[in-house]
Image (tube, helix red, strand yellow):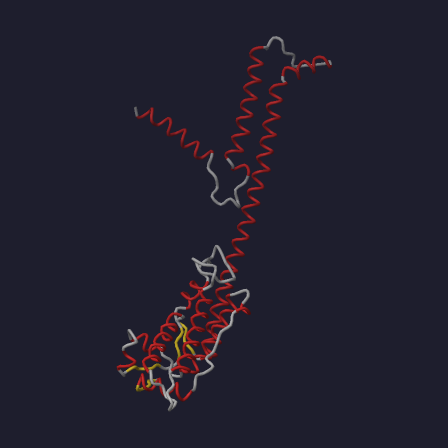
Length: 307
């Protein structure tokens, strides 16, 4: 029983060696391809088998030494079938060789493209990180989670794929456009607060309205992973009720008005990098804000600054 099982195992092992393909197709030769080997060997075996059959069946009628044209013609007529089979085998093998070379060329081209994609991905990501580092240095800001920002702005990019125009996973619209729209909306809201909440004495009467706006602005800064030098501590009841945690409190810039121009520059710079048509995108700044009133409001809400 054990002997019977050993025989098929032996043949299976031989077949694995016979049809083994080199994993790295860049170095696999035509002679290592089992399909090419099978075509040639089977074709030759069939040809030899037919020739042997002819020799056995018509041995007496065969003449191996010919000295006339009729003898040669008779010999060729006898060997016509094996010669036709052998010709067909070489034709099929030649065709397969062409296909094999085409596949190898395609693999080499694809590999070259993949190498270019990988290099472009690394260069694109490095350029983005350099821009973020430059913004930190020039605008005295801190940008956290730089890798996450790149992944959020270019979610489809990887070592196997690179896109130079930013877009969201569930939308063709880039996250940078959402950030710009949200920033513009916050600036418009601030203008409305300054227009509509002034009393006859020129002071704000709805401090809680501004506190609510400031809470939304600080949450926006958290969303963009941008923070400014210094922080603000909220101690008044008016301000504290609008800020959910310490992270939101500490994201309030110590110089709020300066943060508007800084954020405007940051968003414009990122949009130029992320969008092919960044000129269509406008980043607004507040037009009705009075510096002394803005400072007074922040002081009313926070009571004290910490640097």
